Length: 321
View 1: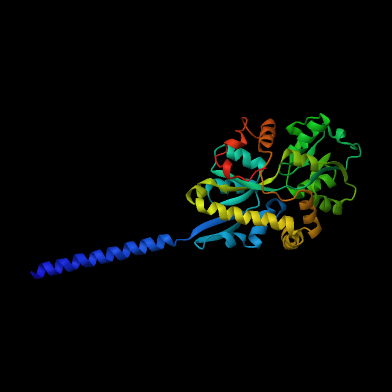
View 2 (view 1 turned 135 degrees about the vertical axis):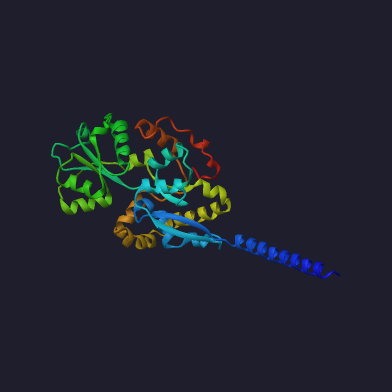
């Protein structure tokens, strides 16, 4: 055989072998490439289910070996919404007042499950305010979306409507300070805020408990995910939900242990945490979506009426009552 042909054939063979090895290596690496699963959390009642997942490593328990779990602390609900929408995080807890408008605007955010509620009530130091009716026309301070619950309660149960100018949205420290120094007529406080306020001024008085209205309105912190991620990784939805469901079960059936774990993280007593969950048990199933959306539209959080719950793209996969 011609020497040049032998050399040429050997070279072609070597190239083919190298190519096969390279393709095999590429296939092997792709098959074992880690998928990053980023979860947002904050150590607070609003994110309690997510915190149980984090502390008990439940995502690690259910996810395949090729999934890398990463946690990132995000204290602001608006920042968590933006992180979900941009894909910087895969899952997060988000208040209904931010979740529904984001879904309506077409952000790549999907509702996965229900979450937690927190107790709240209206307190005052104004001696002229003795009943809920006395709050008409007064200045009310609040945090988060508590104004919606209050407005709904006043209108539905007392026939009193409030203008936006009567409300002052502030952070927790300012909220407590404004109340205890009598700079506002009333303030909407959670149980934890009440105890902090009473430590500064024991003269604050309860005017109206909003527990029943919170349940009626449906203000909660939902479990949401980035829809682009789950469309690209549909096999990861079930383990995500399995981890979340186990956290809900732990809260409802082993509350002492959960409260002991979360107490130092939340800077709340064990009894405070237990009391919140005893009033509003953790719930997996979503309910009241359409009523909540209607209330948001009524109070200007939505520019137009929301589409019905059953028209959500992932409606079939959402646990519901």
